[in-house]
Length: 298
Image 1 (spheres, rainbow, N blue to C red):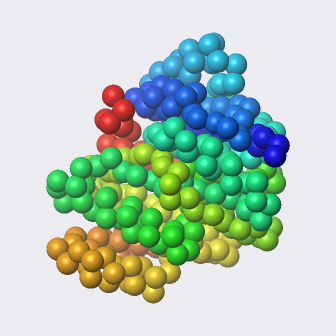
Image 2 (image 1 turned 90 degrees about the vertical axis):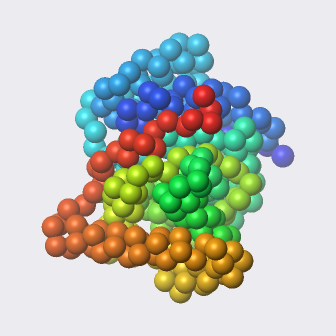
């Protein structure tokens, strides 16, 4: 079987606290059927020294390349810059504030030996401690997303897709979902890989948590209108089913489920208000600063 070649696009804005750990993780990936051709870091007007760190790696590793953009135009625009530069058969997009497990690239790219697959996504695992309300909320939310994706693939944080897309809408605030829509239009399948782990960090305060959920809510309304596509997390019936199942399995989670549901309803209302009333599309969003340093990899 021929090797599968891929290129990675790391999308960053002021990721000095995490970018070195991320690049080392990618350099150390355990690969058998997959070859990494390029690791292209698309840096959008970074001011914290991120570019200098990437240049140090690039000087020692010819696969690593810095694409520094003078203006921050949003994540989707940065993804388009990567797509226009990469020529591998498989493209992988990863946020700069995540860390993949050492076999994640192999699993995410290797799945494309099946010609029916157009896009794959790993399982985000937050490092937040469930020892307080916000940490518990983050853990529960991502666990619900995991169980949702097992039933109906919803891909995010780190995704791989066939190099058949020229560009995604630059005003999309939910870039992975926009890619999903375009892959589905090609008649190809999505595949969620629960054992392809990508570690991330959720917000550590409620202001950032709500801001993040609010921006995603706006993004999905925009996506539904502009690309006529809805991801699994917009299926209210499926969400209710998963919430009931969670309470049946772990009754002591009921107060947290109620709390998350209330915050989600509030955030979705704010997202609707932003887009429909204020005419504000948050495709260049405020950074959640507490998500930017992965403590477990220090």
